[in-house]
Image (cartoon, rainbow, N blue to C red; front, side, top):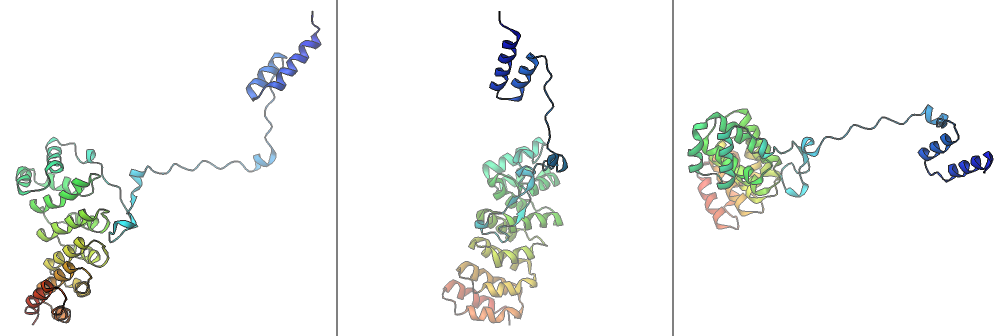
Length: 277
């Protein structure tokens, strides 16, 4: 028979072999003793750990950084997050219209199919201009132009956002193209910014054309500068826009374009100069 001392030694050896607090506590209980409370150092008590920082918002809620390589007028700046396609509307008719747009693009036939939806389709298309589906973003402004919703501040804001922040250059070009068919007051300032800063030639050239249709004379300085753009189509459309403006402030720039290396620009300058006399 083993002596009580042997049992005590065995328990102590068991404690030494324990690798964590739980096993140590079991070893002490085998001796009939309660596990001691852990001792917290005084400096820890005096300087408690800070509360954990609040979790950052989910990326889809925090907006996104417009890629600097997108060439957008406001590349590298924040814009609100894209709207998920599935969250654009719960209305079955509107949902069908969006699916049609997504599959078939914008056309007069598509516009005729959904014109009867009136203000409801206008509202959902304005949201769709910032949809997470690039194909929908591409065609929504064209369909809006075909449907010709009332000219409101909300309409201008939707076009301005796409013109300045849209990361895809093809979509930006399509937005500017829609504005050549659907003159939206309140977009001249954004169009000028595109003309001056966008790296995409299609966006710049269409912005020049669209701003000429708006006849907003505040755009004349930007158009004058754009008559010296390295891209032919930007120069050509800037010259045409100055002619549409009919303001003599653009005369010297148009006169200089008579010597442009491209014959198309020279021909348009000849036409425009006659409107500036």
